Image (tube, rainbow, N blue to C red; front, side):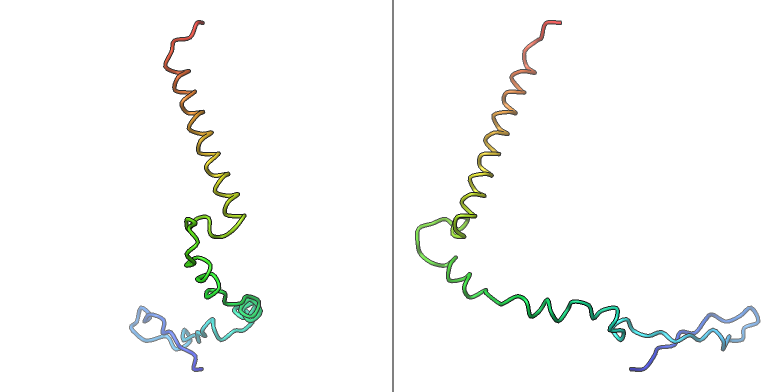
Length: 103
């Protein structure tokens, strides 16, 4: 590829400065900068979109957030437990703060 050249601003006398012309190369021309790990990362993963579409579009009377299997079920129950525990704790703190305390 052709290198681009940038012209420096004119000197105080109005003459262009020919020594200030510097070649600029594109970063994509340097494989040492951009070539690390790109080919192996593409080849390591398979395209499994069609398989996932079959699983999530199946008519098995499950909500979409549980169609992923046991892991989704565990994450759902953990999330609901944390939400319920946080709600109970916030109501406890609200009740504790709403009554006067003896010093």
